[in-house]
Amino acid sequence: MTPSSLAEAQELLRSIFGFADFLPGQAEVVDALLAGRDAIAIMPTGSGKSLLYQLPAAAPGGGLVLVCSPLIALMRDQLRTLADKGLSAVALHSMQEDEEAAAIDAVASGRAKLLYAAPERLAQEGTQHLLRNIRIKLFAIDEAHCVSHWGHEFRPDYRALGEIARKLGAPPMLAVTATASPRTRDDIVRTLFSRPPQIFQRSFARPNLSLDFAQKRAGLRQTVDFARKGGAKESGIIYCNSRNKTDTLARELSRLGFDALPYHAGLDAHTRSESQDAFFTHKGAVMVATIAFGMGVDKPDVRFIVHADLPTSVEGYYQEIGRAGRDGAPARALTLFSPAELALRWRIPEAAQDNEAAAGDYARRQAMARLAAAPGCRFMRLLAEFGEESAPCGRCDHCRGGPIAWPRRLSSLALGWRAALASGFASRDDVAEVEEDISQIAPAPTSAPIQQEHPPLTVDEARLLCALEAERLAIAKRRGVAPRTVASEQALRALARERPKSAGDPLLHEIADAAALLRVIDQAR
Image (cartoon, rainbow, N blue to C red; front, side, top):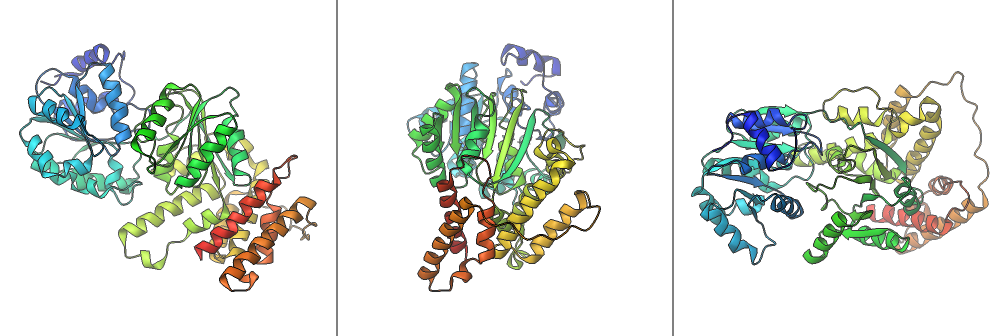
């Protein structure tokens, strides 16, 4: 039987899990589950969501806790933790070999108290037949935002989980996630639950986390400087939007003395497992990964998160930065972006207006572009995406800089947007919309500014401009068009002027980065 009171649940909390008391927000959800009510728990990373379904599994008596989990890495991490606590838990997923028969036998015999299963596996008739013969005392759906087109990391198989629950006798349901906008939350209720659930939502604020955004200039150098900001070697995660960049960046960081580990879906299962195990056991390990890594992985001492590319959604961004500072100590997050990335995410094509999934995807991308581009407190804008009001955080790059820093930040941003406009990535309406947002927050000038001509290019800027012109010419010859069709002279000069002015800049790296941007422009056309 399950514990009949919070007092009994608290005793399990101490004896099995080693905690003296519940974390804020946990007790209320556990109380609802003890009363047999369905529940949704929307709680930030580090709030102890996994305990909400692990504790009922540890309770004496019969019955199985079934947990739908979207990632094998998440299952492996939690199985390892539960084994240390002596709790019988198994998993069913596509990457098993010899373990599958043992897992099925443990479930069928009643020895297993908790079963993790991928949504694709739950959709199979064989799995449903196995579970129909078992009393399921709780059906928990982890990372429940995956059910929604409006949430990040949408998984089509999640849409069938509500019907699967009904086929299994409609057991008590629990949906948990760290990120859910109001629209995503409504999708979770409508899709998964046959009874009205009780909704528990904690604040999304993270008082120990500071946020920084910066335009890409010398991406490797910016990443290295940020990773070394804490002094001694610290553990961190660096997210990239492509597998090739993940591999390249991991090699470069290793060359520079970091314990850098690659992780993405293109690596074989053995390599991914080795990287994940090393990340947990090596002090100061840095995981360089695509979004395939991180969901549900609990490493308390991650001190920094870097997004080497602009994330595709605010919900995904929040989920990823939430992996830093889970021990409550100060942590930091840096996001690097280019004007081209902002422009590509800004506009919603007319073709997407009548397609809910496509419209949701573009809306998420646009919200992320706004977070990167707009001035004002980062956390205020981030929390507003989740329907939460807040005061300025005092810790993000804008709050630390204050109004005095706005003119410098905004002029740099405007320059980047004009480069995107001249290159064909952004429309004049896009730039006008950004500048309107800026004007609402930035202090108005006391008098009309005096127009000045741009100063001459420096020697290094002129060298960079020559490299850009050569790359533009090569692209134009390959396409059989005039060079100005690829990018205007104004755009090339804007890119050349954006280079950092500090001493010792690796100009050759900047030339390579800028030339790569032109190649991206060519491919995007």
